[in-house]
Image (tube, rainbow, N blue to C red):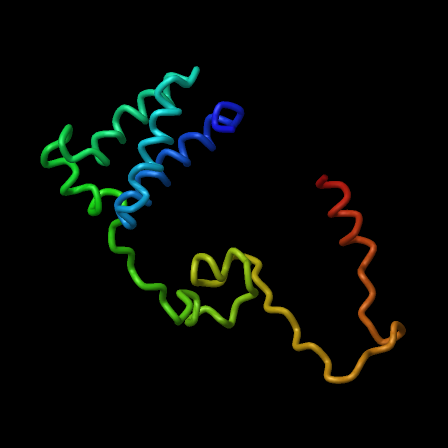
Length: 139
């Protein structure tokens, strides 16, 4: 039921109705129906948006406005790029500040290489007590 939906959902439905009427002209009656439901909504924003969008659907009322509806609501989008923007930053840890800014941040240390074979607990480096104390004191 349109009246029971959240305001943001109603606004998105209105935009969808206009986009559908532009890309598939056989859906114009459905779009007009959705706009007529919004005409009597309790929200001022929904009513105002419906009044504005109605001009894009009905060419008799809008004149030149309906000719530009496809350019306004369905613009050409750039094709997605296949290569990552961070390709030249692969020496930095993924998601780190250094990767984001493209240079080593102060205090940056690269991660050590992962061992090929599992390492036993006795061979791993122990966390120093001073480091743990510093971290807990800072928080």
